[in-house]
Image (cartoon, rainbow, N blue to C red; front, side):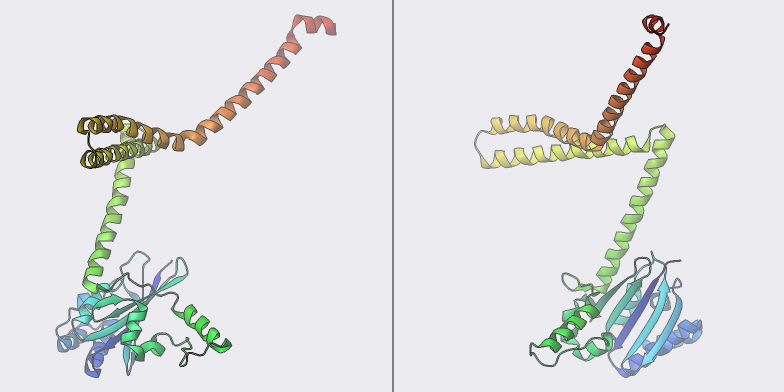
Length: 308
């Protein structure tokens, strides 16, 4: 079964917060929620349900002097640990790096978080250069700016190591990112449910789902034509003289454009089928004509007499 493997590196503000976070997660990984809650209270009353998702499995906790590393697996459709990051940033977490290996596609993705925000890789290491060798241990980073073959090799290695980084267009708060991801997931689920309901409705009414989808596409094309006609009318009326002229032309376009777009969509959908059907009809008619000629030759009185 495919799964996503998460590696979450957590950097705390001070060693005490790091130690408390270590105890919380070690007890959570061991299933001892009572002790985990005890240390979570000392961390600042962190919510265990927020820090730990019951859907995580194969979990491991590694404590090191400068960071805490969590490793766990999830299903391919499960959420990123944004809720845990949101809770940790409010209880002493300074920065974090999340690396996810998507087993289904064999790809790795890395995200950088600092001060409660998802930031770019460049911004992260500009503020936290001491963690560059920790997060990217395989990379050979240059200390000088000389341009020789060795430098080119180092640059290639560096690019290969951080090429999986996923950077936001601009910094975004983890709380906002979590809400956006939840909204995106909800919309995707609603879209799937709408498609299923549409297919059921088509089946109940005896209409082919394909024909129903074609009708939806044509309706969308018609609405697109109406929108373009409306925009044209508004722009021309506001910018040019001759109100009734442009209004009348807009009304004409409101009829012509939807029909044009719908016809274009219909041709795109049905064009290949019609061509194949025409070719089939042509081949069939030729075959029928040939077969008919053969039958006439074999059974006609003139042919029989000639053979006789």
